[in-house]
Image 1 (cartoon, rainbow, N blue to C red):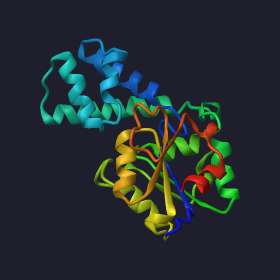
Image 2 (cartoon, one colour; image 1 turned 120 degrees about the vertical axis):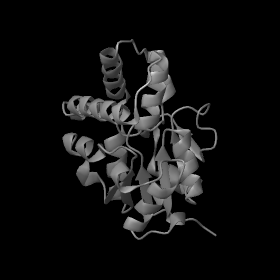
Image 3 (cartoon, one colour; image 1 turned 90 degrees about the horizontal axis):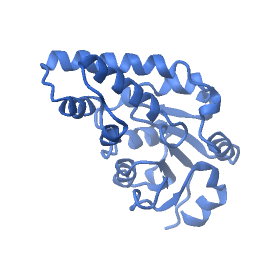
Length: 218
């Protein structure tokens, strides 16, 4: 059966913007206040990991034990640091080619959705004037299960009244690729073939993506 792609679903971080540096700065400040240093090498362990799981890793680096209540407090404080940092983001932080490709998709008559685990996704979209690029936005506040669970992509398809076979996902993390496949969708990996082994197509960034590549490959 021929696949007819009618919807493109985009992850946010690593696909459209790169907020990893802000997460690192916020975690580093959290560690500093707890009395130890958190290095960029330590931070690599947090990629694709939830906020609370990231805090557990950070505490293990510092060899610190906290109560559940204290953990909630530190995670919330880290998020406030992060929010203060992204409040200063500027449109030139949009990854090269991302705006142009999504605009191209829309002009071709395809629907667009954002499927991001970030609970701060709307803040970033509004800050960078990206909100109007998406027909639906599903973020971390609307889902219970994190990727690789397919919930976020299934909700995006439902919001646009699309069959999963009509959707294609753009993701930079293996957990996101797995979530797309679990949802019954094809996936374009944004990044390195060494990391995104199971993606159906891999490009280094949306600046390397052409509309015709969707038709050719899916």
